[in-house]
Length: 518
Image 1 (cartoon, one colour):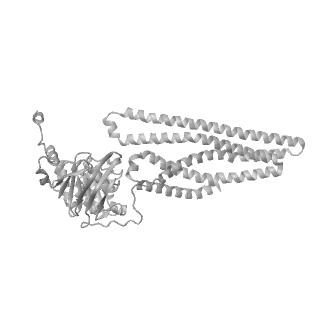
Image 2: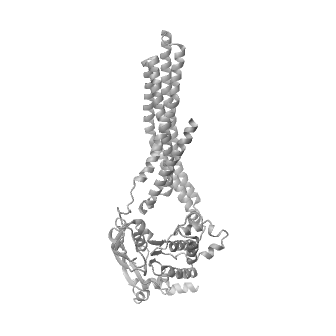
Image 3: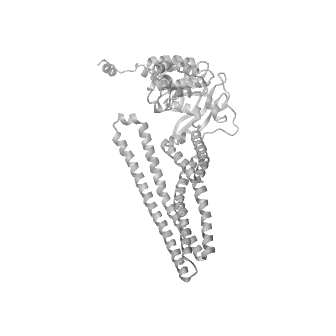
């Protein structure tokens, strides 16, 4: 019956765990970017893992240990009371009461050690994962020993907390055994007195001894169950705390779907201001309009707010003031999923999944056919490279795409954006990791991909945006200059002209020229 019970319950428990873990995972994906930038992946992973295991233990303990033990205690006390008298029932109940009070008190005291141990384990996991993800950086600077020492420092904290947990557990077990031994001795002495008086037989003494021993097994287990349940509840609480966190960025109730196409995909920023932290304003009353079907470039120095424009457009963050409109609809008033479906982005840092090149390309549109995936790879100038690899499109790219070069990762990101086939395209430094020849070929591909679509190109290299219908030059969070490439170059004192000259080696000093000759 025990094995049958385990078999039946396993299905119930595992299904519950799977459902809850999936809900937590989905909730984490729905939280805003600000949450994920302030959290560490290793700790989140540990939290979900421990919380899921905790659910299984709590369900098992409550159904198969706590409830049966309460029933058994009631039966044993009733038999002792009816057969041997109130004193025997009193000792058994008193034993259980003292035992329970001691267990609860000591376990409550021990809880903080478990919390410290969990924190140390999280920190150790974070340090290990962070260091291994940045393996190349560690190697570049010969800091293997430094990383090992940091990891060992965190493990020392875990060792100390674990030691306190184990020693306090030994104290708890000792106290529990002492309480039960005292109760057993007391009830045996009482039974011996009754035998001497002739009120009980030796058989009754054996019965009393057997019944109290019968209680010792579930009681001992109940003590450990309570400890584990307390620890499991702490782990579950941490996981469910994540579920109570609400995303700062979400759709309004009954928000309409954003319907845009190549003719209605105009974008308008109206007096948009934004700061990542109080007192650190990035954008200041930024206003500009992108007509539908036009290619607009945004250029400027580092920190001028170019990438922030993309994050606000995609609603990773909300503007401090002002509003952003697509197709004359405020993006805060439309369904969030429909907004993000309408925009394809090639990010500045192209990170890939630890899977095949085909999976990473297909990720742009999971419903796309294999032929469409290959066509997008051809447009991004990566198809010829892929077919030369031994496993072709089934080649594993490694964690975060580390087996590919920077240029190859960027071309995969471009192919994904093309495959998504959205009416609005955003390229955030889309060709920064490419050589000049490949860049020229991809720019031709991008011209074909952006034809008839509203597109935003953010670039440091001005040569990549010369063909833009209009160029916006950002400076100190505002648009300082606008116009086509030719118009902006007409003013030799403009910021755009200075950037162009600096990038095209027209601003070399005589000393720089001499050093080049040398």
